[in-house]
Image (cartoon, rainbow, N blue to C red; front, side):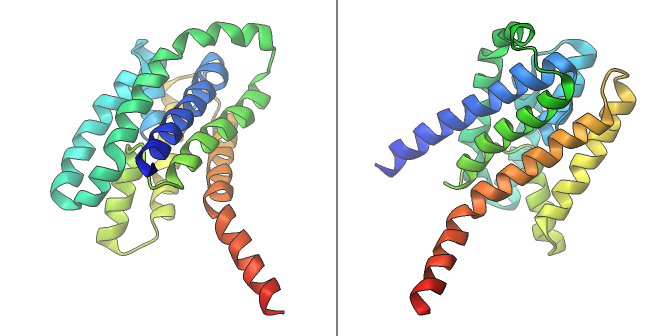
Length: 205
């Protein structure tokens, strides 16, 4: 039953991720952090499929995790493969953006929230989509530091490089996306913990 739940969450999370990217970020030339951000840079410059590029970027990282810390490999391999596939399968929905009439500012926030929801619900069940976030976890483990700080550093560098490489990319709007993703993930991942703690406090009083 637990495996069925994980499969459903993986599929639903990947759909949220794909909609956020294809319906809101890509049509407006917006950036994201991590390996997805690198994939977007490559897409904007060469037209290569985002999911395929994400897969190719993630493979070396997963090979590294296999030798360095295998639990990270097992937690991320399925998320990476499925999300990469779903991202490219949902590419045709980019045409709907014109009908929705969402501007770049709204799209940067909405797209970030959707990506955050997709990533967050997967993380709640221990599912990762890998990429540079996985690399950040490895670096943090070696340096014995907070993985969140390493992820933030990676994301900032990637968004900055994207804005310098692709003239149409707005660093301000892309940072809105990155912040929206991060905040949404934080809320979703910590939600149950906060509820449990609040209940314990009420029961004690």
